[in-house]
Length: 483
Image (cartoon, rainbow, N blue to C red; front, side):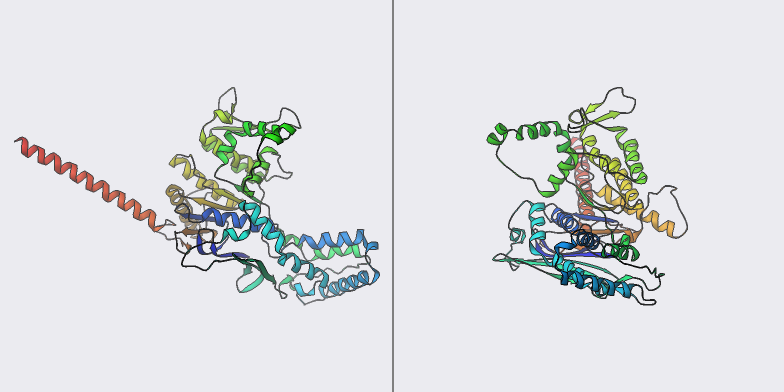
């Protein structure tokens, strides 16, 4: 399954079409739209509860559970119509050698999903929340060469088969319009699978219908965003916690002016201030966190709560040290990586989307190459990762990990660990000023390095060589004059 996001005149972006891979990389100059597009993907992922083959598949079970619990509140004709549609769907599901399609679902369910897909308010509210602005038209890219209209679309498909699509259009003087729909011919149950017939006597039993057609395959993960400001948040967490406590008092409310964060930073603050490890955390992903502590931090990130109701306190204990350090007394590298360690240790699961702005921030070039390996390990563990970056070292190491994957495809491995990437697992996109975003396909020689990086390196080399030649020429001239 592939998810394609297409935007036109969105923030600083003239045009872009990207598809999400296990590792998606946004690279380019500052103020070219990398964060804008990353935030949009986050908003889409949250709105659809994960970008899956079947949007809001859990709605079906919830809906029928609600109907079964409150069936007496519905008029008899509505109950009878829904039950009739349901048992017709069951008959189609239990028909041998016949694919079960979206159009075979009860009409009420199809209407409910169509309404959710096209309901304007919910998605525009999420956009306004994530970007901390209103109205949505403020996201339109204003230039003299473009019309003042914005387009955002999402298409989910596999090969030539479309599963569903979603599109938002808006202009300065008009409200956003939303179009799209689910392909009625989308197959929900493969005819090659064994049909499990069952007797359904009560409307509540229909939940088994959706277990029968394997709703697990439609589930998608949660989304998490580590903003570029994460290091500052960790360094000033104690001060922020004190401010929040004061804000909860009447005096605090009177004296403090209200200001707001973008949705991503607000979500990050909430997850940090109310940090709790999720049940069923992945051992494989937790192991990636342990490797990060061992290879880069050379110490442990500790979580302490003075009382069960108190905000958690985050400390750093260096290896071999007796005492732990507060984040405000730790290095920028520690406060930069601590949130990533915490997320991997207890929040992120297989199938989740993790967006990281500039994972190389405050890191030595050698440490940046280790971060590239961390991203590869996450991809191997089943986490979908999207990063924005300016780091040439990070890109070069990602390219080397792809080359490692190419060797593995040919049956030769130079690395016994899981630190490799397959070329098809990595999508890199180059952001320009006043130009459409373009994909950077992997090249065996140049990797996924943008041309402007190579041009800058060449210019620096030429400048260095020219200055050296002038210095040497000046020295030779001084020697001649001295004679």
